[in-house]
Length: 336
Image (cartoon, rainbow, N blue to C red; front, side, top):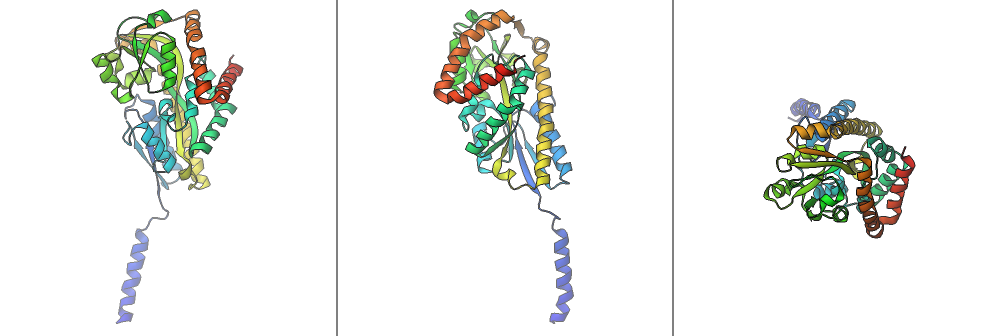
């Protein structure tokens, strides 16, 4: 009887083995916070990352993209990166500071003269040193810096041509003391409102205005409730490509290479698209019905002199004098 069962058992074992994958597939849950639309840099970059990594690893790494905050708010995603339950996320500066407070230093206003200036600082020794500090303190590996748009002031009341025009405006800021200090220093009244609640707050008049880059103004259709925009460029805002260090450590050398190359491709697409939108701000926002105000270098200098010292004092006292000084020194040394 046993002899009769042997061929059957052998065939069953062979069939079962054939159904098993040749290698264990690893899944990268990739979270970001922009809509899954072709005009949104985060999503286009995510698709490029997925294509590269899955092809380069012959499917050993599978990428699942979760756009528009599907895995939860930034704080929840950051905790997921720390724990390893989220493998990769592209998170804005305001979302990072809850886990890594030092990232607040990028709120120093009127620091970078243009995109190229920011890239030189972020891609150079300063950016690498900060990324390693973050990895050691949080278990989150900062793989690349990309654009969240150069931030400008918008409002529903009047054109802002000088700092005096800020007085009396209720200006929404992200929940961050740095941006509260920035707006206060210019004479406006800051009100901290989460990103998801911003369109409703503007529609209801809870805030007269807000500050964001062109990409975010488009993403949330903020132009529907904001008549005026001033292209002052007070902060170069960041997105960071973040990978769970715990997950990264499980990858083979070839898989690490594929992920690193994929992020570099995504970063370039992300930067290029956002920069193009920034540079086309006047045309893009005018086409949406906004009245666009541009300010000259002398007026921008007035905005800087009023706001930068106040923000720097806060950062040096409450975040890190060492890192604030390092950033400002790197920016000054790279200025051409």
